[in-house]
Image 1 (cartoon, one colour):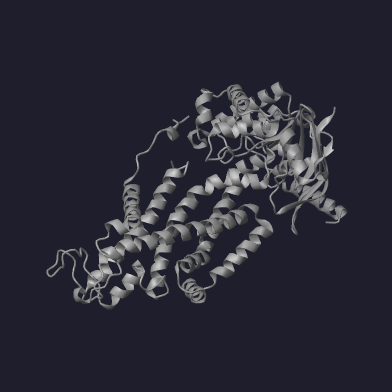
Image 2 (image 1 turned 90 degrees about the horizontal axis):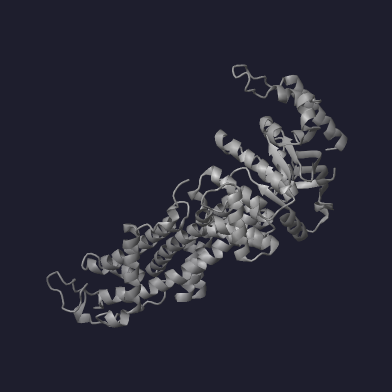
Length: 289
Length: 283
């Protein structure tokens, strides 16, 4: 299977500071959903940001390759890289409350991408935006297009962001914890919507989350990240049947189940944590960091 | 989903009415000063020195707010003084705003060395005592309208730079900025189309505040006799003059003082009112 996004040995660190990503490699096949799981601080979001070129300015990429559709992004000059990312990739952000510009109406915020990236006319973009809003099940799209973000609910805004991510028909979408900021009932609808849109448009999706339950519902393959290092790479089915890495096993064991609501949760054991820490340390020694 | 409140026009608040009303009145007075001023503001008449305002015993008809120790009409001087005050407020306020906001926006959004250079510069600048700095500047440049304006800009651009930098920084961390960049927008373009509209309400509030401050600074400089020229009527000059004879003729001091007070208050209230109105989140 051809991978649309292929990250090879990506290293990211804080300038003159700690290492954030340790030789991360992962692949997202065309039209597939790849999950990226790990606890907070593991560096999951940073992978997405590195791909999209929106890493915080305090961080720097110190090595590796990011192949997007056969081109290594890191070798491109900045302007060219920005253009290429804009044309082929999009982001579904974590927090729908800060992801829309509060001082602009919804309509222009969606159509702007179509005008910028695809060079459409305003009228074409307008028509397409209405279609998209309808596609993400927003009632009364005409009125929503004229609204300001603060007039809409969180779930509604996340739908708009999904619509706008799919607007320019990107080949790759990075969803950075798209349901974390929403409450549980809305989460489920949004997940279903992302899945539906992904299937219909055949987009490759990198799904960043800390929630294994979510991963099991939407992903085809996944990577488990710990302290900036990929500890396990697997197909979905295999991972849930036979996780290999002890950390993955502990993580799975720690997931609450609906079948046994009264059962107590199993924390990830100390021994597993220290084993992974050791693994990470050894990696750093080998890498000479 | 909530209602589209953005489509509903809110009534203009009392604050905006009062402050806007006073400033409009002032602008009209300044523009039409030659037509409405009852006397020549520079005309002295030593026989009519220290005449009280019209409601007091011994008032001279035609001199509504009384005269100063040289027999000049207080009302006419206040009206002409409004011209200088407003010119200083508008020109100095706008220039300060443009310089300070531009630097602040760049520092807060670009961060990195741009921010370091601008922020250190601001820190060093702010270490100078402002009034002393202004007096020194005017001593070097020589008194005059231009000098006053330059002095105000030079002292106060740091206020804008600081506030706008902080604002731009917090806006820059929002996801919508990242989204705009992912969509292939340049950093400069993002700054103009995404960040600027969101710091605009703050810029407007600061700008009007700055206009009030400009009026005060001009008054302070007149007070120490470093303003425009001693015979053109300025509020600060009138206050300074009135101070010496406050026991015999309080009106010479009090009327320009009230005018100054109301004007500065109106500027700051206008700013707050406009900010509330233009901020899409508060609206």
